[in-house]
Image (cartoon, rainbow, N blue to C red; front, side, top):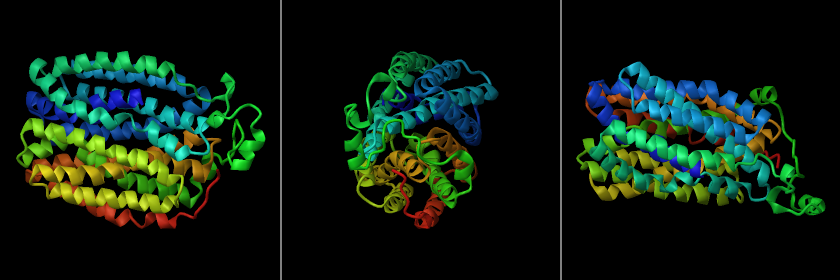
Length: 395
């Protein structure tokens, strides 16, 4: 949660505060600046299966430590860039490092929790909930120090927070004398009675078998279309609200409102996943995305930030634990991290398109709204897709 929080403050949510200062200093078209995040998606698609394989092979802690080191290095580099290619390279390094660290967490969480896995994953993904509250402070920091010095300060802060946190991760409970869910060593029969798999659970299918199932491709399509929403909004959220008349401080505060309300999705969806048909939960999250984007493209007053942030936040936040539960349900634990990583590489095409779309939209029309409307239409078309999944659960 700490690592997710730190990278969210600086990179996933907070980078929108750096978007305009960097573009102005180098006089880059918006499509050039936004294009780095499309390249980031390409990198994520290539590195995600690798990080998943490494987690299955070496465990979560080693992958997380390496990811934090790479991400911190990339943040330092961003504070020193002079050319567009350097900007792209540093964004890729931060993305590769933070993505590898974040890919390490779901597998460990699944290994430690069985009976209430949805809630555990919801809590695990809640690190960024308060990250948005710090984004207005980034705006103040940039105004006081300049964007370069601010980025270097943040790189130091990320390293100080994330390295100790990564060292605390434990991939499985058994080597440390524990069992999943905190069951005592003699609880084998109790686990069986409650339907929880035994320690060292290796049920499930391999990567090749997963690729041959319809479920894999349906889940990938749903996650990909869903991810276009945050990919399009996050990098220009502050510039967008400024473009519709919000003062810079008010525009930055919308990120805080969003992240706080996304906690409802992260935590609440975990409870829903433990109780209801997961397909219906996914459809509800896509519907929330849809409503949130419709509010966003029509925003005219600050009060409209609340329904946008609530709906879009529930959709975005809720899909984080949901994707982990879906992968575990349909493909099992044996090769979870590898399949999780491969799923990310398949959905990367959607993430590539979204940042380019918003950059081109602003350069060609002077508004981000056309790009948001295209993404909204695609999400609407994806709402019924979960019904193609057969109700299947390996746990």
